[in-house]
Image (cartoon, rainbow, N blue to C red; front, side, top):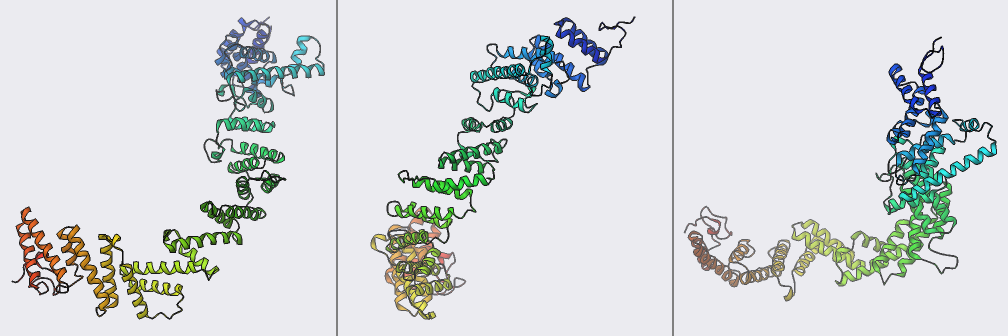
Length: 610
């Protein structure tokens, strides 16, 4: 008679029979036989690869590692819930009990691997469909069948004990509901293989999005939001495309929408709208029920039935949120615009900036709102009056806005006066830059808004433009600076170009402007500045003896300075220019020099004929 090494006569040794023998030895607590049997499997057949045999082998190896207190090895070898069905239930039960006992030991409240192992094993054993025939195992050990009521009670009791233990360990470690082992335990009981022991970490036994989805599915959306807010305190930064929120944006958005509906039912209007707004920012498209809740919250936010709790700020903010969420719901736009107009009127005098912003926003929300337009027009009229009086910068007002106001209110004197001043300034600026055609066009604009119906002939326009340039060059004695004097000379030169040399009045204005600038430069600037003004050819020699004397003195002073610096050639040329200027010869032509009427040839580096 042939007896194989398993102790059974006349049977061929196979991997399955050796595994049977190892499982039986383990259940009989003959642990000294289990390891040799597993080693024989490896030696004769290699490590099992078939699904059933591999799972049974892994569970035995896992159980032996746990018995040797090598829990990292046990965690690594733990198979999936589906593979556990192939293993002996008794071995699985023994391993599950060992894992649970280990978790109960002091200092192991953070051993995520052992917790994951215990959760996977007990979720399998206590599955509603009794996948591993745990009830049959108990029946075999009792010797009698386990009645239905007793089985249900025992199962409920075990589930509760495990839940309580995991909850206590969560509290001791300070884990929130998202990372809680209790959450992973509940998720694994509903969906197998949520927990993978070999992937368990300190931040949770299951992925964040899985934990969040389970909490929402379990009706614990408030607990999820409390924990999530503790992790990310500023809901204003929660967006679907943010790396911090992308993984579970849809689940958190669903939880927010649910809490929003709860808050609407509790008449917490502002809080509800904030939740719906954050949910939308996380990518949620509100369904019909959620949109109805937003509409209800928008109609009631910031006010109560008695009117005593009316809060304009809360109402405007809430209506803004509701309007954004329900842009297609036109019923909220008029309400928001009316509230904005009401508050704009309320702070019209006390806070003009806020009032203006309220009216502008109301008009953006409801473009045809007459009250909002009227409020903005009132602000613009006040600004125009201040600008015309010179107490407020003109640049703060837009031309198009004034023209629009004048179309609505043709009798607005301040608007006409502002536009007239605007085109006058534009004409002066354009003329100073040599853009005569544009300057004339601006003069016509000023005439049009002054009430003159035209026609605007070129002579009339040019005369008015010259008058504007002369007027722009005037200033008080306190305003006398080099920059103003320089600008005045430029304006008068432009005026002479437009009026022509025959206009003595304008020509005299330019002479006066050049002379005053020369005297200012003589007193406060260098001789070269006076000479540079002379070389611009604004005034011919012989027109003003004072001017000629000022320029002659400048040449002499610069000659003295050049002599001190050792520039004898430059000093000689300056003295020569001064002598010719004193003799009245500088307007005469020179051989190979500048054209007649130009300034001192020596100053240009050319030697004169005489």
